[in-house]
Image 1 (cartoon, one colour):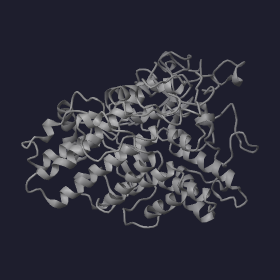
Image 2 (spheres, rainbow, N blue to C red; image 1 turned 30 degrees about the vertical axis):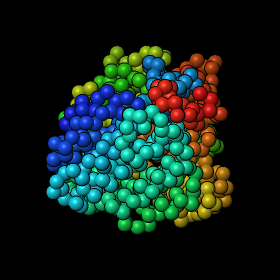
Image 3 (tube, rainbow, N blue to C red; image 1 turned 180 degrees about the vertical axis):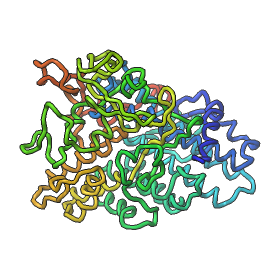
Image 4 (tube, rainbow, N blue to C red; image 1 turned 45 degrees about the vertical axis):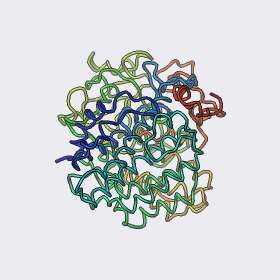
Length: 545
C-alpha cells in the first residue's frame, strides 16, 4: 500500500488549511485550533500537523514554475509572476516574491506549532516523538534554506512569533541563517533513520541521507567546495546514512513503477486519488490529450545534449545533421524533451508519432501539435516536455507520481564539480561520477566516456556544468545553478530560442522568443515583498528595489 502516512496528509491538508486560514505575513495564521489542549490527544493528530508541514515544503506547481525562471523552459502563454521576473519587469509587489516569502514562513510556522505542542500528547512513544521532531526540524531548515537562497538576509526565529514580534523582527544575516540550517541538518542526520530502517508504510518520510544531501546542497550554493566534498563523501563512501546508487534506467527513474528506487534521496509524495498533480495537462502534446501548451523546452537546452560520440553538435566530427538534428544524441534528450517525430508512448502501450514541424502532420488530429507561432494553443518553442510524464495517469493527466527533490545523481554531480574546482579532478573521480552518469544514460563510445587527462580545469568545468544541466533538466534546479555560478547575467539576458521553424532572416531561422532581462546588480537577490515591509518597518530592502 502506497504511503500510508500521506493518507493522513490529504485529509490534513484540507482540514488544517481551514484551521490555518487568514494567513497574514509573518504573524502567519492563527493556530488556536492546533494549540488547544484538546487537539493534542493522539499521535495521529500530531502526525496530521507534521504531514501538513511536509505538504508545505514545496509542490508540483512550484517545481515547474521555478524551472521556467531558467533558460531551460519558456513560458509561452499568459503573464505570470515568473514571466515578469524573466523579463526584468518585476518589482517588490511581484506575486512570486510575496508568495515565496509567505509560503515558506507558513511552513515554518507549522513546524514551530508542531515542535511547541507535540509534547502535550500523553503516552506517546518517545522514539516516535523524537523522530517526528527531527522531521519537523528538517522541514524548517529546508524552508529557511529556500528563503535565504532567494532573498539573502531573512528573519530567523526558532519559535512561534506573537503578532507584535512579527511586526518588528529584522532580517538576519545570510551567514547566520546558513549556519543555523547546517547545524539543524547535522543534528537531525544523527536522529533520523536511514531509508532502509523505515517500514513500508512510512516510505517517503525524511531520512538521515536527505539531511546529509541537503547540507551538501547548502555548501554547493555557497561555492564552499571543500565542505561539498566532505559532505558528499558521507553518502558516496559509506552507508551510514543509507545505501544509494544510480538507478539502472534514466527514463525509468521517473516512472511510477520505480518510485523509491535506489537513487531517490528525497521526493515529493503523491497518492493516486488522494493527493495528485496534473501539470502535464498544459505541458504534453495536444494530440495525446493535453489542453494547451503553457511552457516548453528551449533550443538552448536541446543544444546542450551531446552527440553519442561525446562531441558538441558544433564540433567537427560530431556527425550532427540539421536535417536529422535529434539523431545520435544523448539518450537523455529523448527521456526529457519531445521533438519533431518523437515516439510518444501512450498508456495502452502503443506509440504515437508527434508532428511538430509545420506542414508535416498526416492528418488534422496530428496537426494540433505543429508549431503555429507564439500565443497559440500549441508549443511556442517547437518542443514539448516528456520528463515526469506518467503513462498511468488518468483523465486530464491526473497523476500520483512522486516528484524527486534530491537524488544520488545530484550528489555525484556536486562531488565532481567540487573536486574540479579544488583542482582534484582525476580519472578515478571522473569514472565514478561523469562516466557513471553517461554510462547509465546509454553512452558507449569511448569519446564520451574516457577521461581526458589533458583537459584543463576550465574545460572540465564547462563539461561538468553541461552534464549537470542535461542530467537534471526540468527538475527545478537550473535557476539555482545559474545564480551561484553568476552566469545568469549572460544566460538570462537576450532572446531565448525555439526550433528552426522561425523566420529564416532572424537568428538563422531559430524561433526568436520574448527577450529576457537580468540585471546583475539587482537580480541575484529577490526583493523583500512590499506587503511585508508595509507590515514590518524593520525589514530592510535588497539593492535595486
